[in-house]
Image (cartoon, rainbow over all chains, first blue to last red; front, side, top):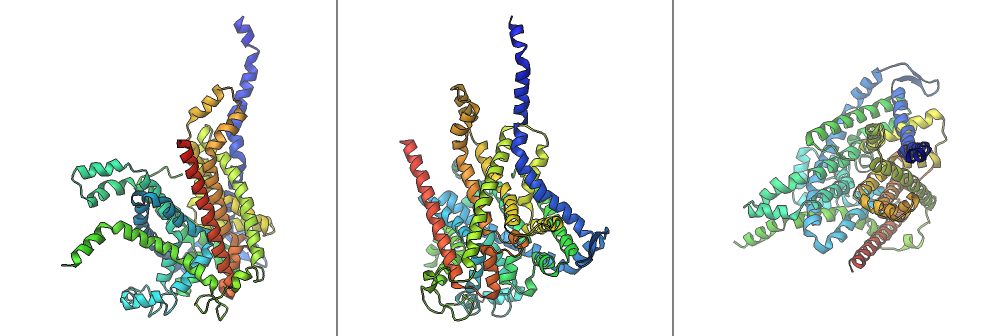
Length: 304
Length: 270
């Protein structure tokens, strides 16, 4: 009896379960399609553009001209090195400046925590271009900041290092790095704060009970436990900084041009599409390789 | 001898002092933007202080094309937020709640846009649009913005959905709630803080985006592009007025949000 009653029900159950099995695909379809068409496919087009030759008037043809890559690299390697150097310095500065603030918010701010957090996020809501332009005022020639740096003989040191020139800070590497550091600092602070906040405060007490000095506690307990924050913070800072051209354009001079500036001008002004595409591919390859090696070595894989 | 206590105090409070110094570094440009919105510069550029004036505040749209670009940016940010939030939330639910094929490939497709310098995405997207012969403007900007906001929404929503207790939904089903009812009355309200965070992030990213927009806008001018252009032609004081107003509105909205969240938490406790 029961077997007879169940038999006709089976197909509907199966139909329902196939429908259920298809649910994730329907959920994924529109978003993933968007990413395939407007993120992955453009990469293919760019790869093809980078091996084309021709001119704007006659049109470009795929000729597998890989020479473009070599020529582009040979001509613009100073900009590549500069980009990596500036982005690396800015990332290091972000870590040094951001860590104390993230630590302060996580462990010492008490009831001020939310207010300090809002202050960290708030600058985001003024367009970053306006804020970057404000640095032109702050670092202006003969302004209070430059005057203070000169009086304290800090400018002498930075001049000797080649970061500044004479009595100027604007239009020097220091101005560009300062702008990059400023612009990406919140991207360092927020992940650091998230991973510091998760640390059980009893671990600090335990370290203290075991006669660790505050410095040892930090070195052996706090810092290792905040590693996920350090890794994602440095990535979120270094990746956008390496491709940035806004700070170099607004705060630097022609001697501080980064690879982003070259790609932008080749693409939008010179209209040499193959060179621009090749440069952008080289930048992508360098960043992806560095990121992969870094994640492997830091040992944090679940970043997404 | 008298230096020792000071040094000791400095050492004990090193974290607080260094943290507050960083905070000052972060806030300083906003203060400068605010102060210089009351400036009356002599030349075309608003970089050095001349004298106090409220002229720009009285006539915020007095600069040609600026308020038009601002409203365009707000419209694009609005639609990009809706698009990215809907698509991103769907992906996040699929990733956390279901099993399916090609999970690894899909995960990297979502991660890669965040691990790519913006200028690379900008340039390649322009190559696509040029090859398709698309007319650059509102729609190409919107398409680009939805694309790069999507991954950030997925990350924000996914974190929230992952921390949800699945027993709550089981309980709803045990109490004879249908799948739609369970989703609308239980799942969505619990996931909403994550969705709201993702949407806010998408709005901020889209509204403030310059690099991708600059490549794919053609002759259309968004607010960040207007500011960029003015850095070459001359910066009107009104830019600082808009910057300051945006800052104040954002601080009020975020503070109000915190206040409401705190009150809800307290009333839940009581």
